[in-house]
Image (cartoon, rainbow, N blue to C red; front, side, top):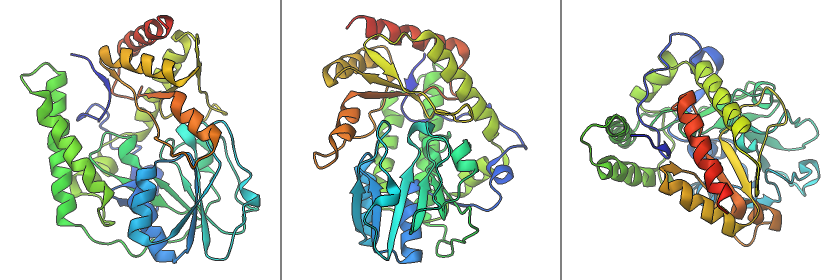
Length: 344
């Protein structure tokens, strides 16, 4: 039984005592989610206004605003149109959030930005930009790119420390335990065992709501052990790059555009298709789902955002091609993608 995308199942095929998070990121703090990282930094530094790109997850923006009270300012920025962030109308007490969308971008300097900068490297935390960052802070929602039930990471290229998150919350441990169970149930389901899909799907959906309101807390003990002592980060990213390249070689760009990276050091978060219009996007999306490929739309963008950001959201599809999949899996996926697009 093969399904592509959606939540991670439990994976133990990348075990290693080398190239774990602790080997690559010497000074990092692991929290339960990426949004908790931003909330913790705002509370610690007392910033009054947060500049966020208008192409972003607005559920995360809502959580940040509710938990910190910070005033959120948006600026036009998306994967195909980049704002000159050096010229935004900053004030004292401001902080800027920059995002490497889908891991596509090469290094961006912050040397001419007059305020503190947080960079979000959730989509590629090993790329050239993240590795050479000169930001005050970097964050990554590692639960979105690694087979974990939860996880966010903070590190500072400038050597700053995060000091106000020390607790292991019981609720957090409970949520993580439920999600670990769901991941193992999904593995059994994918292996053809007698598992009702709703058993694990409901666990994912119910526990996902927790991240909207959860207070910043250290990552659960089991996830910490897994990511710091057992999981080979470089092998995972190598597999993702190989899979993406196979898709790029096979998928025919008819009625669509494949978004590509600026630099060979970048690892694309996913295989991102940009369709000609929203109607065609929805048609292809439906066909993929009918064939057990579950693409994501990142993200739902409000009318207040720029036209380009709204248009990109309306036409894009994000298809996972990470280390969950073999070469044969990816070729099967490519064949389904091609047929879905050719039928337009």
